[in-house]
Length: 567
Image (cartoon, rainbow, N blue to C red; front, side, top):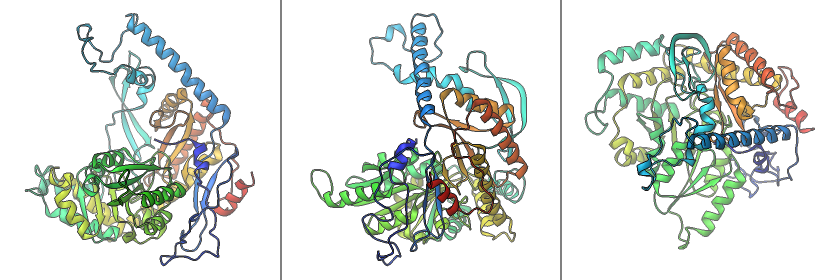
């Protein structure tokens, strides 16, 4: 889920230096109503919008650059026209199916059941039948190797327009993997992590067959939890076998009726589900918009609960570190300032940022140089940077003790698999440098270098890319529906594996390809991918950017922003 480009500027994403006359609070943050932002200007169409927060009075220790170039008007119009044409033909195909001129492959009601309550909502599947199926071959591709920097794909063929697939028996070898969240390259079948996991598997087996509270609490689990707590810089932590359930099953344990959850509009489905299951009141603020968040906080305190106007039992702000569809990074210093000002709690999901951001790889808190104790609930997953599975919650010991007895994930879910646990332990020690090598630090540096290089080259090639300059998640805008499938197929022809995303996962005019940069990618691999992207971009006319002027390696962020703000 994302929002359109226009609202990004209207939401006040452009931040400026705070007035020097303002007096900072005890934590170094300026506590004012405008809080880090000038009054909003009226929106006017510009070539590009680059947003940055200056290095001011302890808020940010380095330039904070996020770019969201506006969708060209002609492209937006043609995209709407394209979806309109697809919709018209979709209704025509449905008409032909109803009259038996065309076979319908989806489940439908039998004639003798027409008078009963319908089991299948026919219209709700309209998009699936008529749009998604036309480009379904771009998803669910089976792989038959380690999803590292390169992977092997099983070749498929279809004879009924993607309704079903048959394996041809051939394998596409050495496809450059630009889609997996393998940020630090620990998804591998050789090396220290693989050896340690293999040895652990021989000793403990693959599964535990019990919950942590019964006979599934291994010494490895306790070792991992102590290690995670040290890694995050918090008092205690708890690990879970599934990342999605870490959010969806723990948020209901933390909030309930009479509590208020303030959720970013682009939060992950697991956070949304957890908030809904909790029974709390949910209010959504605009993505990364501190003015919108502060207004909700101020109104919540001023008015209290609906009807009774009693104070909220608890106010919980829920945000992510890196947003995986936008490539944007949360404005954490500002969120913490607001959280302290209004005495709220903060839940931070670092699924994509842990291991991928910060000089020590310890996530968005490390990236901004903040105190981990300022975040009340630190959540993250092991599925990305650690090449494993599961998730964690970190915080004060009282919090973890409470979750041990109240979290459904802790009480009812099967314990984390022993070899998965060992994979996380070994990779985390590598990142921390406790394995006696500098391999972890080298991977962190390589990821940062690859991210900067890949983003800069795509910009120079003339593509519109979204997100923060330090984010390894790189969305490249495609816009038109026909180009979603075409881009994925053309890239695969050139031996590049990519992820393409369209409506309803994104706004209707903001379809995109999403690249994930890894430390395992070599410069040669990135250049090969960039050449293929450029070639396909020319073929499909995807170079929409109106600010594609190359800049030198030594141009700093400030001069780069100044040159664009002149427009």
